[in-house]
Image 1 (tube, rainbow, N blue to C red):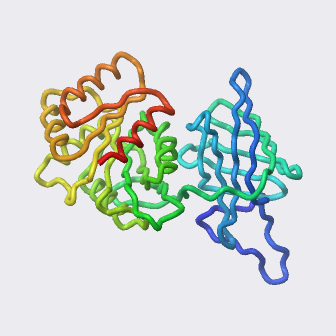
Image 2: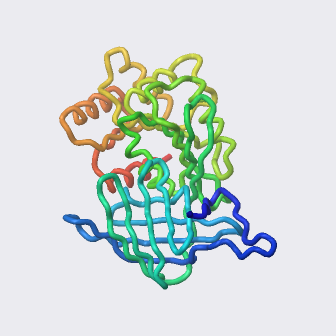
Image 3: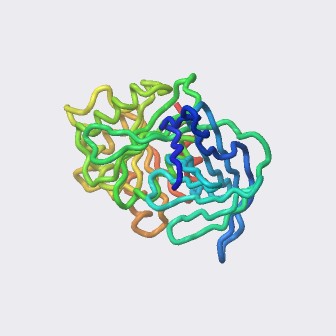
Length: 316
């Protein structure tokens, strides 16, 4: 039976005369991930004990950023460590302790990476932490990716994925959280109501470490179209989001071109496309035309695309 040691849940160090609960070895580990038919990857692994009863763990794969994550569940017992990847049901890192080594498997969809990690010293400081929460207007848990250092207020994004983009949204959240942004990842849906938008923006504005004047929105697919419509209506939420990102937005219809143009004149707007098929290329060009100046569209592949998004977010 694994003993849960989730970072957001307190665990007793000891209880009366009972023996202390099993605890994973804290430290900075480095090693390799290998899978049949794929290049070997270098990985760093951190296990931290930030305060009594709390642990957090993180996997960082610089050559394949989409594999990096901070675990939302950490469980340890009998020399076995199990981490669950936030936002990806069934994706886990399972490790067995062998002295200063961890050996095990990183399970990512249908790919299993054999994992070998050796302790190199104390853990590196955490960049961000992740926790579950509920936000009014959304069905299901939201994930909050927030900087470990909240002393310098920074920008934040409320992310509204669709079923089609839900598979990449946690990786986007990880990439942007590592750049210092607070990310509220809402459950995937096909609709976007004014109440859900207002609640998400209000949630971020009261989150520690967030600059309330730099709270923006990220919506995907059809939800991006709904967002553009909502934000250009008289009953749009106030204060309005400071900036808007539209991921994989469809080519705007004639009726929506005006909404996108109006939105780009009022706020900073960025279109983001990470697919390369003919339909996506056409949609990206159509959105660029609808936004006009100063709206922008980025199209590309990871990891360069997330760097471009982070650069745009830093611009004023």
